[in-house]
Amino acid sequence: MPIVRGAVTFARFKVEGLDKHDNHWIAKNLKAHAFEPIRKSSEDERSQGFVELENRDAVEFATGSVHFGEYSLFSFRVDTLKVPASQLRDELEKWLKTYEAEHTKPASRREKNDARTALKQSLRNKLSPRTKTFDVSWNLKRAELAVWAASRKAVEEVEAALEKAFDVKLVAQAPATAAAALGIAEEALAPTPDLSWPDFQAEVTNARA
Image (tube, rainbow, N blue to C red; front, side):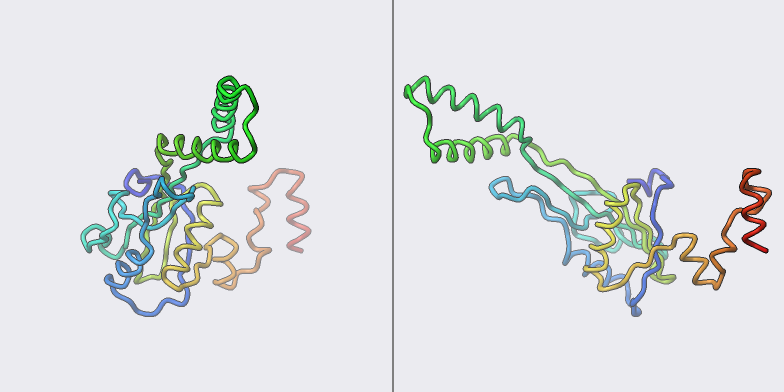
């Protein structure tokens, strides 16, 4: 839990299209898009959804587990369960050798495909899902939200899930975006001569002239 550990890597957003809502609205939408574990009997290799901040297996979203002062805190969980291709290939090769030794002939295409399916399921049953969680802090009053993740891909996935679950638009609050909202020209964000390398100072001076 990066929020609890005090990590500083996060992406900040402004929430647009947000009408006035209370804490129950947050919990309702979290439950509607809650995480569901992958069933090993299925073909699914990935599952994602929202979970409570302090318990990645909990999806009740009670008031005391989500709301802390002005903030709503929760996590986005992603599970993957995929049999490594190399492992499946090795197991299939072993099966083919055993089959040929017992039947003195190669397995047919259908028998090979059936064996691959059975072996994949057998290996899948022995695997445990790989779990990742990404924390979210949302100040509903100020319409500000942060996704605590270092990976751009992870941030984008959580962003898309939030927009779908809450029917809002998240606008990244990068320095350039914040400056534009304040009416500050992009040129004004360039380094000052005192903070630039000597060979860059002349370029900045000319650009400002």
